[in-house]
Length: 250
Image 1 (cartoon, rainbow, N blue to C red):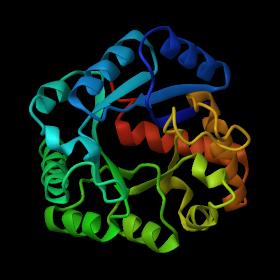
Image 2 (image 1 turned 90 degrees about the vertical axis):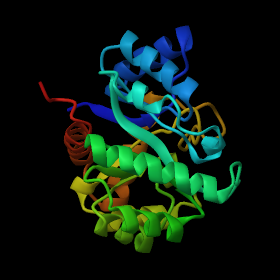
Image 3 (image 1 turned 60 degrees about the horizontal axis):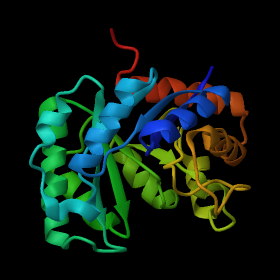
């Protein structure tokens, strides 16, 4: 059973093609390349069109919420798009005002409900407000908390709302014990793995450019945290991600 990197940001052109080829050689058969702005979402769609097994999302990152959502609905009509997002709240940097972040997050949640498509959530230093907005609007039936950075308590809150937890290379960092504890507590069929490339390369590649081929190291770290085999994580995350994004639907 191959791997899915359920959240990456592939570059356009030859660099992206090389990363896709390297990922396939490493046993990563599917990649979801994620949009954070309207223009980047267009780029992700073009990349998905060019490569079998690569799928795109379209969304507005909280950093870019000030740009609004004009044009997003049209991008979501593209057959290569499998989710809306990444959307959410980021109070660590506050690149957009918090009230604007909340409004754009709410709009994307509404789109996920209206279209019955997956929602990809980015939340950083904003757990309480993220949960409050989801509780107000209702968590879409397919929701993933990407690059999960909480501990077991936050993980339990996400799971209670029907969400999935997606673990990145941070789970391999010495400082990632809370993540390892959260992974240990998370049912195997409720978690995913990702690189969030080009960021957050896992140990022993930390500090270098990340790439989808390295999602296998994230999977190995999840397996260690859960005291199960790497093959079990590989099979479970393949099945869960494929179903979540509807990748095997005719």
